[in-house]
Length: 249
Image (cartoon, rainbow, N blue to C red; front, top):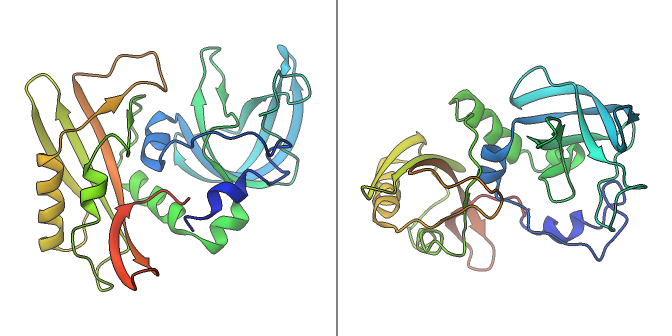
């Protein structure tokens, strides 16, 4: 499932420009950024009467993973917006989409927002399972800083923790950093098993966390809270299990 990233951008449903590319935010970051995360069927696409540069997308919502009561959101009209990298949505399509409140007060999505056709979720349902666990544990806070997997060596060291096929597929760990007093607290939301969890907790606490606000102009909070979604993934190249951050791409 980690090989869908390139293919996704070739889908005519969402883009006409195969030359376009952008870096998807991680699932955990995307969820924290979002005001709403929903799955459903598009039942209407119409010009927004208050701004003709926008389209209103009306949804038959199947499931709400974050936020409640949202039945419509907005995209830039790809026929009127500048540039090639725009979102195309059509009546009848079924999607999972992460949505954000924009400065104009509207809930919107963009070309680089996290979204997938639901037909892929049928084949790879793990993302939906994770979203349900996150919702169940009320990790619904909104914060706009990013946890960069390249800058933080936690993610490379994580793969060195020995794993196996008898432990759960997914673990979720909530981290709280006091960036002023230099302490880290960790809460196990969904664990693997005690010995592996203890190793992960130790690694989280010993890691120097680098946070970035390149997705937002908001300052990074002194008391920063985020969660990590860790997958126990079977690696065919080595024929063994390995702990990695979940990202579906």
